[in-house]
Image (cartoon, rainbow, N blue to C red; front, side, top):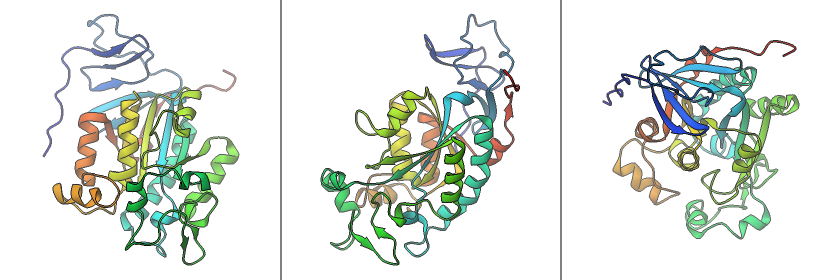
Length: 301
């Protein structure tokens, strides 16, 4: 059992010069970077401003974000990882309904929706590291770019059926794409933010995004890899736990070893979420997002 972090006794600012959070004794952690702390006597936070959103997170805290500087990053909810004709992933399929609830709500808040997915080119097939190539091969065969059964096309190549979003999520993305709220971003490694200039990092910087809500599969591989790299780059990280799942077994060392011999090292989902909360940021759920407080911009403003 993990005990919640004690509340601060007086307001505390973490960081400075436009790159900061402020935590208040009430339990609010303001990530909006809109109101630097002038002195510790400011016990009460400022009123919620237009375009800001507040919702509960684990650890008996509430966070405040700026919706226009926030993106929901949904990782690898693709046919290859979820479709019953290719694998069994019941916990991943449960996330589909939660995403169908949370994505439309996030859009109405003004949060951008980023569908970050494997989508390889012929050139990228030649540059993938051997460890990753080996991790996606089973029994000495298959792997990136090879043909899958049931008309799913070549494994995780761009434009193939197995690389499309699973079921209703593909339609949900197309709806958002048409509205200009949703964006498809390809990745070619476990992390969507690896290297000097990934497509995801460029998009975030070009659009002034500082806060990220995470969901997708698998929690302890591609989601965790992207969360870790996002944290290292200074983004605010919030995992929406009921939109996140994994096929890995429960356990500490056994799970670490399991993924070390397949794709990458990991922790179980529960341990991963605790690590996120203690080290990388915050953990919330769909219910909290649906109950969020928001001050919307008035028409004509």
